[in-house]
Amino acid sequence: MSEFTEESKEFHLSLQDADSTTLKSILEIHWDRICNRLKAEVGEVEYRTWLQQITLGGIEEDELTLYLPTRFLRDWVRSQYNSKLNQLWNTELPQIRRVELALTPTSDTPANTSPVQEEIPSQASKTNDFNPIKKTQKQAPPTVIEEPEIKEADEGKIPLQTQLDPRFTFDNFIVGKPNEFAYACSRRVAERPSSPGFNPLFLYGGVGLGKTHLMHAIGFELAKAGNISVSYMSAEKFMYRFIASIRSQSTIEFKEELRSVDVLMIDDLQFLIGKDNTQEEFFHTFNALIDAGRQIIVSADKSPSDLSGLEDRLRTRLGCGMVADIHATTYELRISILEAKAASAKVVISPKVMEFLAHKITTNVRELEGALNRLIAHANLFGRPITLEATQEVLHDILKSHERRVTIEEIQRKVSEHCNIRQTDMTSARRARAVARPRQIAMYLAKQLTSRSLPEIGRKFGNRDHTTVMHAISRVSELMEKDSSFAEDVELLRKMLEN
Ligand SMILES: Nc1ncnc2c1ncn2[C@@H]1O[C@H](COP(=O)(O)OP(=O)(O)OP(=O)(O)O)[C@@H](O)[C@H]1O
Image (cartoon, rainbow, N blue to C red):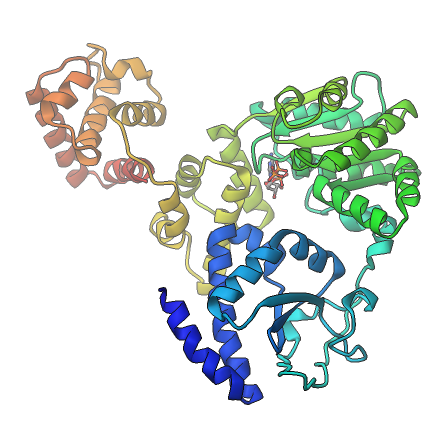
């Protein structure tokens, strides 16, 4: 039996007689643990998106109430996490047999009102006082701070501009080899929407490479031009709105509204995989808009032909216009992005730190941006310059997650890149200093960063003798002692390779 069950027994006894403050503490302890478990199971991002806003309600006999601040969240959590929440609560406290998900009560709404009849409350979950409702004795609901909230039924009428992120403009988008084609296509669509050959525009690429950014940028340009109605939404939101319209019997209005826009942008289309009804609805909307000469822009993580979970007819139609791929970033693009972001934040960051970041954080721009923002925040907070050491300290966790085993080939590649020589020179017989010195540095690093023996290292460097490797190591060590800038360079290389 797990420790939870043992403890739960104790709480089971105490729950019966607990006064409201004790009951509150008991439930909070369990809720904390459940939250941790949920976080571990669903991941930080999903947790923050959907579950973080849940607050504890109270217990009535064997039913526990949890509150959510909006209908959307409540419905979503109900459809996706209901059984998980029931199961976790039941494991923690076996006397809880049912978890009810309700809207956070407002000051003029009794806590036991049927959630469906309630008005949509404010985003006040964080300020919502705990309200343990014990047995059948119900207490007055907590007062919450009202904030304007968009009602579900009105969501389709939100003016476009409120849905676009003002940071995502063409001016803020840094263009490089990996994204120049997608950028050019986006520009073209923004200038002349619905042009033959560019409709639909399908942008695809890995996570955090700028697809959403480009879509918003197109939206802004079109909005600036005026007289063009643009609607941007994620595929997830599309699905939610579609479901909501079915529930509220307003599907016709939903369809009409969508079909009246000049430009429809749907982000992260892969979300529709496996959602057959929503896919079908999207397909009809898509056809209606294209037939009416309206522009469609779609983004996804894969090309239409690789989105195998989508219906064939939809995939075929998606691939009919312009399909533009955003490739993984190159080192040069990462440096340009860092420079641009540092400049716009009006922060001076040394080239060494930029190089270090661009070498280390290669996965996507979002992570790179996040790392830079963290460095800037840290520097501002403590008034310290952003040195290489500070960078390593502040970004310790991020860098660690990028940690991997270093191979001699990688060392040779990094050193060649850094010293601007060909990688083949690492194994060639050339003895010119411009080539020999980087080769010695690479041998030194191979000894430092791998568990290879001297003869093994020698073999990897063009079948050289182990005494050559020994000589290289002592020469580099000697130079590092004498020349601090040389030492710094080798250190930088080591740090870049190390994680
Ligand atoms: N070329 C670029 N220039 C400037 N910023 C960029 C560039 N590419 C991406 N970004 C920034 O990186 C972050 C992530 O980009 P975005 O959200 O557009 O990625 P995405 O491809 O839509 O990712 P996902 O697949 O997760 O939806 C944003 O803050 C965006 O501004």
